[in-house]
Amino acid sequence: MTVHSFEQHFEDKIDNEISIEPRDWMPDDYRKTLIRQISQHAHSEIVGMLPEGNWITRAPSLRRKAVLLAKVQDEGGHGLYLYSAAETLGISRDEMLEQLHSGKAKYSSIFNYPSLTWADMGAIGWLVDGAAIMNQVPLCRTSYGPYARAMVRVCKEESFHQRQGFEIMLTLSKGTEVQKKLAQDALNRWWWPSIMMFGPSDDNSPNTEKSMRWRIKRFTNDELRQKFIDVTVEQTKILGLEVPDKDLKWNEERGHYDFGKINWDEFWNVVKGNGPCNKQRLETRKKAWEDGAWVRDAAMAHAEKRKNKKAAKAA
Ligand code: BYC
Image 1 (spheres, rainbow, N blue to C red):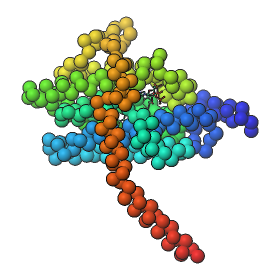
Image 2 (spheres, rainbow, N blue to C red):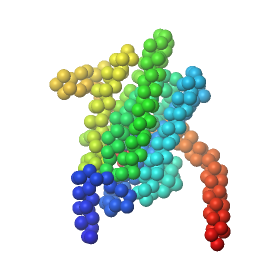
Image 3 (cartoon, protein in one colour):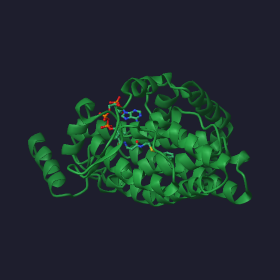
Image 4 (tube, helix red, strand yellow):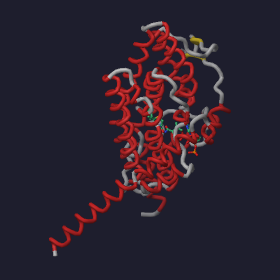
């Protein structure tokens, strides 16, 4: 087979919705794009454990603590499925983690904002996981098999996360005046960063066109952002809270909500490492990696011992 026919075979598979598997030939750029997106996604899950992890010891009841603990553990699991999916493309987990710890790799902007009150646990679950679901359900049909299969389980767990967040917001917003104020304050602080999570607008998104052509992405950043706003504004009405956007208005003609201007300077500033918590998040990740060295060493020593034992038995 010539390179041309390999390429044709690959394109045919994409056009016919046949998933690409690790053993298949793929263009270098397809592989590179996937490694970039999946590793960033994995890093986001792992760093995403931190803002909520801060609140496990301060959850207001045993039930809330158990639920939050389970959610944060789920995020860790999502990171592991995603690192495994990326490894099938020929990059090692150590290399990906090195890129995260050195600041070379990106992770979602949203996790560089502080979680200041218990209501933030509600807002994160409702808005951040809600945005994640909107973005990730289409990824269950992404063209690369291992990524698509990982996303099926991730999405099932994310929808539980979103509902637990909404339930916290509902309890607070139907509670005392002070509780309602806490919920509104959390919504005010998390709304715009959640809108930004979908990435730059389509005319400023260098990767979208190629990723859509290869069916890695099924919708553009702006399409998903609009869907999220349309759904979430209705949920805000049930909570009896107000979206912090004075330009938000239903547009009958478009059949969508119009919304205010996004502060892209803020977004790029956070992406470049200058958000409120970027330094703290990276320091915490690096410390966790260093503190875990003895566990990795012990696991390796154990594996080596088993290997030697097996070899001795076989000899
Ligand atoms: N933050 O050309 P574009 C979760 C970067 S949810 C930081 O549009 P693409 C969780 C982008 O990487 C969050 N950087 O890129 C939820 C690119 O830079 P490079 C994770 C961002 O890839 C709850 C540049 O800007 N979800 O895990 O076509 C609890 C230009 O952008 C962001 C995923 O990762 C951002 N928000 O589209 C715990 C979903 N947005 O790489 C955890 C999978 C853009 O060229 N990823 N950039 O240097 C995707 O769907 C896509 O990668 C994105 C961006 C829509 C995020």
